[in-house]
Image (cartoon, rainbow, N blue to C red; front, side):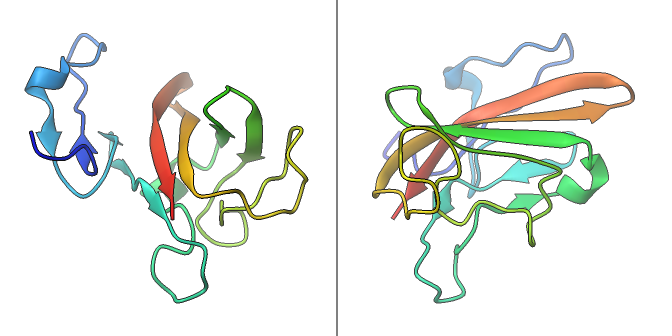
Length: 130
């Protein structure tokens, strides 16, 4: 393994994650049930990766995302995430970090909860803000 930039972890039929040894590498982190969460955000308004993109999110509109820093402090939280007006663009909206301020470059962690057929499920992984 040369890079952890692009990890795709699949869920096994029992519901637990496969070991990292079994993980396949792609351009995203977290592909489950038609959801694909990309792990790079570069909030510089160049039209490329300016927001956290989640493919398939509109299928699961009953959702919530929480983003935490390396100390576990929640810096962003939003329900009904939709990649448009309700999306993460690198700015804090929670916590001790100044709300509305651009977050420092670095690695953050997400917890994406969504409802599928009345069952709440969670995807989690990391985001690199550049």
